[in-house]
Amino acid sequence: MRNLLLILFTTILFYSCKNGEKKTNDKEAVEMETAEFNDLGTTTISNSIEVIPIEHATTVLKWNDVTIYIDPTGGAKAFEGQNEPDLILITDIHGDHLNVETLQELTTSNISFVVPQAVADQLPEEFNSQIEVLNNGENIEIKGIRIEAIPMYNLREEAKDFHVKGRGNGYVLNLGDQRIYFSGDTEDIPEMRNLENIDKAFVCMNLPYTMTVESAASAVLDFKPAQVYPYHYRGRPDVGDVSKFKELVNAGNPKIEVIQLDWYPNEEY
Image 1: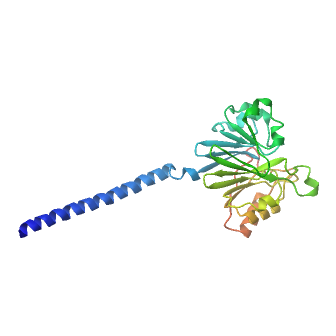
Image 2 (image 1 turned 180 degrees about the vertical axis):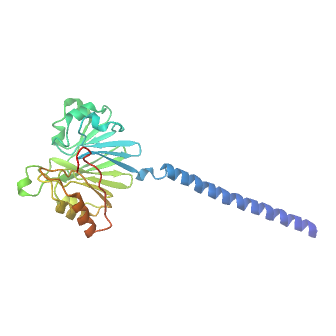
Image 3 (image 1 turned 135 degrees about the horizontal axis):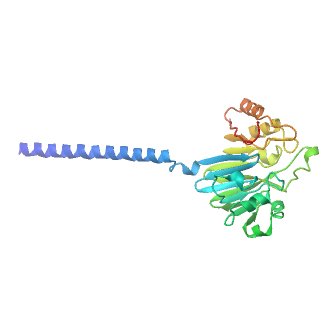
């Protein structure tokens, strides 16, 4: 009887150890699989946003399987090697934001254009069925992306005619759990300073059309984006000093990451 109990105890111990080892190995396998998925970006794909500067204000964003063109200019040649757009946003009527020839050269037959009314008025009839007009303060959801129209306008008396309030849109794009802000052509307006929970901010700084580097930095320090991309910084005749912008922002709040990309690949600056 004693021997029988001993054999029974040994058998139970053996299988308990065996099962415990299997659970540990399964856990390790799950962790390895998760690590492999992370390497592929599949577990974090909702947070993965690729920013591709084209020139000046023209930008390509890639998020999940959606490609967004912001203010596409430069003709189809400027977008060689890029995915075709799933969505196009246009901020204003000026030629460095709205270029009808570029829109006509791109493959756009099955996509939406999100634009302010002033832009819609200048688009040819061939695009009528694709246009979604968004006025300041309005929002719309397309392809799982909530798009908010933010005012953009000048404050300085000598510049007020460049960009009048209500004509153009800045945009906040909600991509997964990230909020991406494009200022469009604007100065440091209250609507910018009051933005909240911005992860990436694309902020203009070119005179005489938009605002000074100092004004841009001051606004950024107010709304505190996690990252800020100085863009649209070529003016006439001067070019915005993005190095000074970075110094001002980091002196005021070193937690804000300033990211400088090459927005003028054909220029020395």
